[in-house]
Amino acid sequence: MSAATTTKNFSVTLRVWRQAGTKQAGRFVEYAAKDLDPNMSFLEMLDVVNDELTLKGDEPIAFAHDCREGICGTCSCTINGKPHGPGKGIATCQLYMRSFREGDLITVEPFRAEAFPVVKDLVTDRSAFDKIQQAGGFITARAGSAPEANAAPVPKPDADLAMDAATCIGCGACVAACKNASAMLFVAAKVSHLGLLPQGQAERDRRVLAMAHTMDELGFGNCTNQYECSAACPKLISHDFIARMNRDYLTASVRSVFKVESASSGGGAG
Image (cartoon, rainbow, N blue to C red; front, top):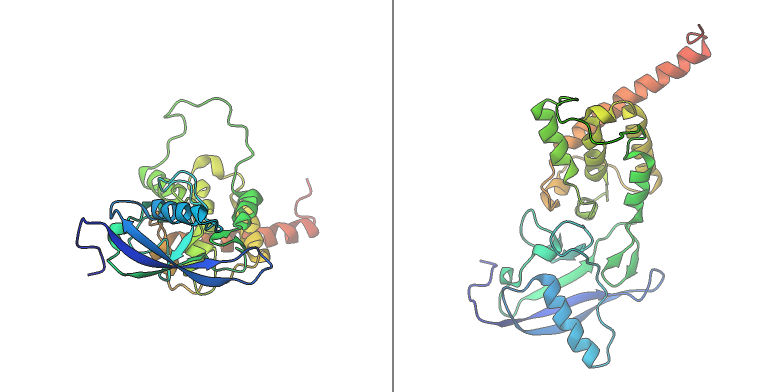
């Protein structure tokens, strides 16, 4: 049993990746984390350790966080070899110290991927996801004011799937879990979210082509369908969305070729 079996305070040893900057070499450094409340979150534990380091005049451990509610996706740490650590369907900020036992050695490092360079310690630059989103994860049609709810009926299965895809918080756990550092689950979620809704149909082909091409240009690896991505996802997004995106990509590619051939042969003339 890996979880703490007591409500009493306990101590662990942290083996933390320390790296001053993107171009500097990094190394693991061990720290004692003592008298921990099992009900504190992993990030609260890091706060306690940093307070002690600061009081001693040492450089605190840099880590990213914001909402601490599993919504923002910034608390991206690999803990004991697993993105976001032990547990299922949670981000690092939702991991509690009761998941560990007295005397455990806990290894903490940043997400490892070429497209996610380390900024400092546990902080990585995940702006590559922003560039993919900017390539097509939006609609340009003017939506105006909120329409009447039933003006554009959406079949419930499609609405449910779109909502499942929309839960992606862009944390990058899928990339960190994949041996190829593939971003397919992230891109598939963003493509499928809009591709399942009426508002997203006008740019459906352009969207999937642009986002997939941008993903490749940014250095993410290929998907080999081993599903580590969905297993590590804090929102439990299904790898089935990858198959959906692959179908959309194939369809869009064929259509784009047909349009080019049709235009070159004069088929588009009135």
